[in-house]
Image (cartoon, rainbow, N blue to C red; front, top):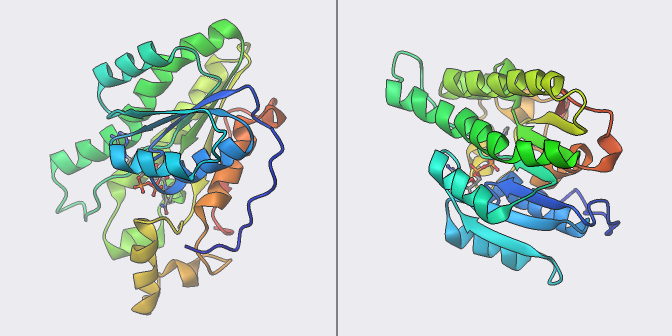
Length: 260
Ligand SMILES: NC(=O)c1ccc[n+]([C@@H]2O[C@H](COP(=O)([O-])OP(=O)(O)OC[C@H]3O[C@@H](n4cnc5c(N)ncnc54)[C@H](O)[C@@H]3O)[C@@H](O)[C@H]2O)c1
């Protein structure tokens, strides 16, 4: 992974806040966990994969308060059980998302549904579970993970086809836009972050392989900054929207996409 982005010193921007991050076992979710821990948040780390969660936990500063929960956030009962155990939250990061690629003529109904479940159902279930508590207590920050793919991305579209993923990531924007209006007086904000090509454990090698093959739509050629972003760079954007500094920011999408 590119390490050009230096983590700032601790400043306590999330001290006293409890933050739940879905998909915290790897990639952007793990980077959010590390960044939030630096800022003093109490963490609730959620992932399908127990061993990945344990790895993230081990990377946190030793004085971090964090609990780990092996949960499939696309399953209604599992999310409800999690909410019953966790109780109130200040910050929810709906990071889980993704989907199955494929040209539309090859895409099965299962592939399409899988993408919607992973990217949209998870966000719906977690937000529905934790939002009422935020409204009741008069404070909340929700950050949802969209993608540059919401507008179509050349490397995804031309390399393998990604209409389901692009549809789902555009759906995240509709979700955030609507709820920002519905929540007008609740002191709860909801925003999206839209990463470009990010050098995560899973996506990084795949994206770099396009450049190694000199493919014209490689992100190294089509992104103005001509490099991949780092998970830490995305985490900093999430941190801003999750912090008190973003108190008058809601319903927006913050691109972290190197100029695309
Ligand atoms: N990596 C990129 O280049 C990129 C670009 C734009 C947007 N995004 C978005 O950012 C988010 C994170 O991407 P990433 O590449 O860091 O993720 P990732 O694919 O590396 O996975 C992150 C974690 O999510 C967990 N997970 C998967 N399904 C789950 C489920 N049903 N319940 C609980 N946990 C589950 C996995 O076990 C994994 O640890 C996603 O929404 C993705 O669509 C990523």
